[in-house]
Structure formats: structure tokens, C-alpha cells
Length: 125
Length: 167
Image (cartoon, rainbow over all chains, first blue to last red; front, side, top):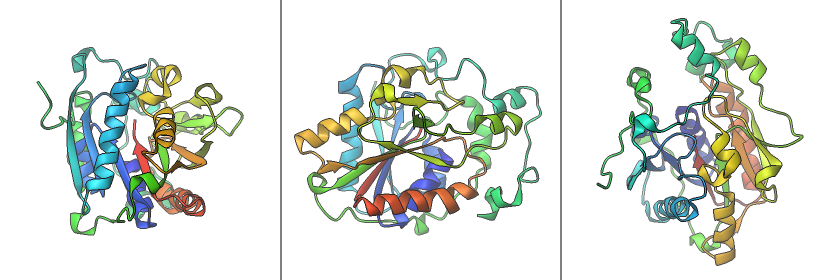
């Protein structure tokens, strides 16, 4: 969510109105976004279950509503919809763990910025 | 019971420590562009983070991510609005992409926005839609190189509003 939030800010700065959706309001509110809807749905299915077009559309309708109604930056709306499965039984992670998740499981994930090449260091933005 | 406040950790409790360490930006400096016209007159586009690209296009660089797990491909791909569900690959390594392969509208609602266009809810869905691959801890090049290219293309196509869909 952080990288796409930062991307959203850049698009907004370019003169294009933006709205996003996220299940991590604490990240969005730290990045500080123009407009964002929050929803307690899992990663990979942030708009709804496979084939649930009315449910997916309801969320898109809410994003359209916020886009139209927001009157200033940091406009956030918590959507009321409940995911039909309990979170601990909801599958969203890949069947093959991502490379960083493998490192974290081994306790080898890097910290800080020293491992980045200079031109890619996020702290040098 | 309807949700009143979304729990950032409901589906990913392991992210709590990393999110706690994030430095907050200054909300007084959040950028803002007013919409400026009714949505029914707006040209809109979509941005996904699901690592989507049209079959035959250059894939996102996952070979380097496997070699350097702290690195994620910071480039973007353009997805023509005419590209169908099965014309695209859905490739983000950090999520289960089988849902998107079954129904892209779970996180990239192209078909819903085409309906909006037919109904007049939005003026037009732009010719070009966009995807990045959302795992980009090295976000400097995403902001300095990719974002300007995407914004320039949006401006060239007369886009008024962008909808972003992180996965």
C-alpha cells in the first residue's frame, strides 16, 4: 500500500484527481492520500469475491462517490462491508511464498537501507 | 455487524511492526486536484498493482526479485482498455493471483468501468489502463521515473481522474 500511495500522490500532483481503495488504513493515513476508501477485504480480492459483480460494483460505486464528494485532501471513508469468511480462514497469500517472505521466515530479512543501490534507496527520494 | 472502522491487520497481522515503523507524512502537504466537472463528463483510468501485463509484453522482473528479495520491479505496464480478461497475465508474487485469473474484477474492475461508460456514469474509460507490481520497497525509481511517465500518458489522453487498486 505504501508504494501505490506514493504513486497516487504523484498522479494527483500532476493534476489528475485520484481515489484508491485499501485494507490498510494505517498505511494510507501515514502516507497521506488525497482520497481513499478503506475496506476490510483481503489482499488480492479487495473489491469482492470471484464472480460477485454486484458486490464488486458496490465498492466501485463508493469510490466514485468519494471522488465526487471529497472537498479536500486526506478524505477517507471506512466502508461497512464484511468479508463472508473469518480472516484466519481467508486465503490470499501465494501458494509459493514470495522471496522476502522466505527471508523473513529464516530471520534473514535486511533492515535499514544499506543493501540498496544508491539510485534505488527510498530514503533518498 | 457492519464494519465501522477497518482493521489494518485483520488479514495480515504480521505487518504490524513494519507499519508501526513507517514515518508519517505531513497531512498539511497532501496533494490535491479538484475533480472540476461531473463524473459523467470525466475521462477516467484505472491503476492496478497486481503485476498485470498483456501477454507478449515484457514481464515484470521477478528473476531479479528472487536474487534480491528486498528489490521489486519499479516499472509499469500499459494495458489497453480493449484487452480482455484472458489477454493478460496476473503475476504479483506476494498474493494468490488465481482470483484475478478467474475474475479480474476482484481487483482490476475493467468490466465494471466499461459498464459505467455504457450507462453514462463516467464520461469515458481511457484507452490506456496501467499496472505496476506493488511490491516496491525501492520506491525511489517508482516515484522519479515511473510516475512521471504514467502521469504524462494520462495527461496526453485527457484523463481527469485515476482509480487506484492496490492488492
